[in-house]
Image 1 (spheres, one colour):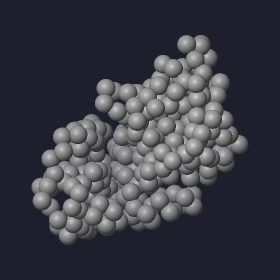
Image 2 (cartoon, one colour; image 1 turned 90 degrees about the vertical axis):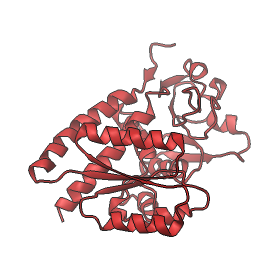
Image 3 (tube, helix red, strand yellow; image 1 turned 45 degrees about the vertical axis):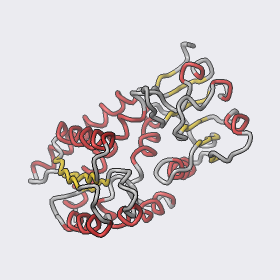
Image 4 (cartoon, one colour; image 1 turned 60 degrees about the vertical axis):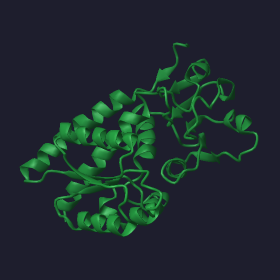
Length: 282
C-alpha cells in the first residue's frame, strides 16, 4: 500500500460528531428537554432487531431517549399508520425511524410518507427527498449524509470533480448523487443495467459504491488517485469494493467495517438532536 493512501476513518469522524453532540444534548437538558428517537420494528427479523438495538444503545450512550415500538408481523398497514400518527402527535418524540424492511403485506412507502417531515430524521419521505434535491433544509438520508460528512472531514474537494455513484436506491444512490451535484461535482449514476460499467468507473475522481454486492468494484476499475467510498455491507464484514485490490490505486478509501457505518449512526443522532433543538426554537 502506498504511503499516500488515506484511510477514511469513519470511527474517528463519528467520535468527533458525538463529542459535539454531547455538548448540544447537555444544553438541551438545561432547558428541560431530552431528545427522543422513536424506532418502530415490525416483525421479528433478527438483523432488523439487531440494527434497532444498536441505534437505541447509541442514543442512550449520548443521553438521547430511545423509545422502542415493537409490532407483530401480522400488523396491518392501517395499524402501522395509526402508530406513526400517534408518534407524530407526541411532543416528547422528536424523531421517528421505521426500520426497513417491513413485512411484505405492509405498504412501506405509505408508512414512510405518514412520518411528519420535522420528525423524518432518517430521511425517508418523498418530500424530504425533494427538499434535499433542491438543496433546501431537510434531513437527508443518513448514509448519503455520512458520505458527505466523511468527505468534508478529510477535506476532499468536490467542486468540478467527476463522481460515479454505483447504485440508484431511493435512500442511498439517488440522494447522494443529488447531494454531490449540489456541491458542484459532475455526477454519473450507474446501476445494474449500465453498459461498460468498468470503463465509466475508470473516469471517476470519486467512486461511491452502493450496489449491494460483495467485493463488486474491482481494483482495475479505479483511476489512479481516485477516492473510493464503500457504502456496502455484506455477509462476512465485506463491502461492495474489493478493498485490497483497490488500495494500490486510490488516494483515499473507506474501510468496511469502520467506514461509513459509524458515521451513518452518528448522523441519525445528530438529526434527532437537531429536531429537538428545532422544537425548542419554535
